[in-house]
Image (cartoon, rainbow, N blue to C red; front, top):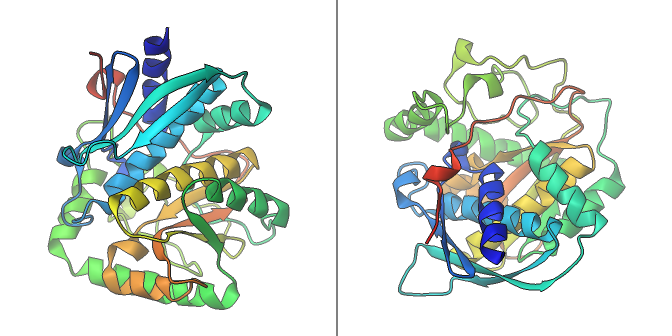
Length: 319
């Protein structure tokens, strides 16, 4: 029975967000345990040379699996980084005592299935309610990370960080080629499809240029992002265990935002470039390590299309 529940959780966890929708994880069941492995073959060596974003992505998948188990009435028991001799083994999940699902766990599971990456600009006349931001922050901080909401002066510095990151990336031919590889996929099971990308438009803080130009198919709408909030996911350390926790916190924040009727998209480019990351670090009230920025706002009534997902047979291994 536990094996069936763990397999179902691994399949549900395929819905987790990841850097360029690379889905850099593998799941393996063995007896009464489910193992989460990073998949180095799916690491982006030029954009993410240290594997930070790959591990954050895996952390989001880990949190998704936990949500699925909780919604099914199971207590997930997680052993993170269980074997120093196997660095790709990031977590091992077993099932604890039965626990009836709560309204919160059911809502999180529903949001897990509805969550999308919202790249369209958010409208100026629809502000994010303060109570919703409080709940999003609490969800992240229940994991092993902190979430900081940037105020207006800090958003200006975030703009400088994003502009600098984009300028450097534009002159990095290897990173540009890697980006193109993941936005022009023959295999529709991963990567960033044009249907989920909006054409370039003026915003207070520029977002990643996916290099699609006229190929970007998602109409941007009438928003200008002046109603957006920018949230920094940060950790006290900067080791793989911290990156994994940042991914779990990102997932928790994003699912809560979805439950609150908010849209979100990650801004990983401001942590990919060392200089930009240093600038973002100066915006934090403590000497913590920024791992990701989430852009959050009130989305258009009609959500964006979903990104593709790899079939379970290529992600989940039994035995």
